[in-house]
Image 1 (cartoon, rainbow, N blue to C red):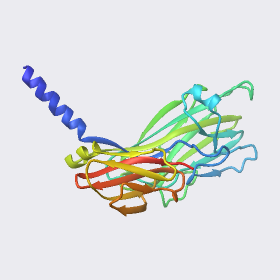
Image 2 (image 1 turned 120 degrees about the horizontal axis):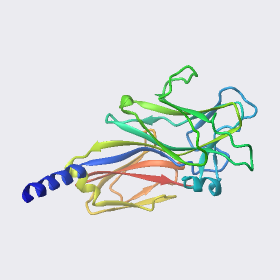
Image 3 (image 1 turned 60 degrees about the horizontal axis):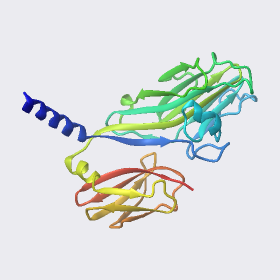
Image 4 (image 1 turned 180 degrees about the vertical axis):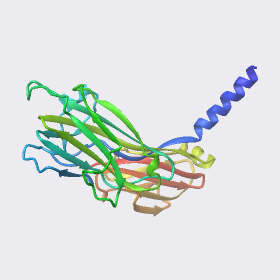
Length: 272
């Protein structure tokens, strides 16, 4: 019986080691307050003059106690219909998952707390599509508890293999503020043995980086490639343990390191 349990445990451990969670897209809105993160866009769908619109905000004293970390994105105003649009995201053929944090902000210092009408919607559309208000969202939610970050998860399996954009639509008739952060798209991928073992032999630093990334590898490096959040290759070079990122825009990237032992994919952040 003990041998059977040990064998089962070994097989389970081996199965887990062959599954990896790969980050396809990551946005934390760490950019200048009052602006949009690179690649994102905003539309005021009802042309409300009372709408502040989606923008990044440095309000950590207010948002960190809610469960956020660092800068966030916010939409505020009254009689609003604000649309936040992500860059194009290339989803792999395997299943993917969208996660994000969202909260309704309330403070008697700014306005009478009214949370009941703080409604938002999430849409996922092919990158080449044009958004219209008649489209069906993948999620509609009305937040009834203020000042608490809620983590939401949406299955993107039906969009596998497509380039898509994410749309966050904030609707309200009363004065409301909605906060959004940590927008992530991840994919569960089964790795080959060479890729699994190679991941333990390759490291990159610093991360975040401003000028160069150094690769520490136990195996000889054959080549490297850098991909942006849309899956577009932005640089490549042969046989070097340093990657020049000075010309990259701030944001999230994937660095593929090809060695004689296999390939390793690592996410890194380029900052100013």
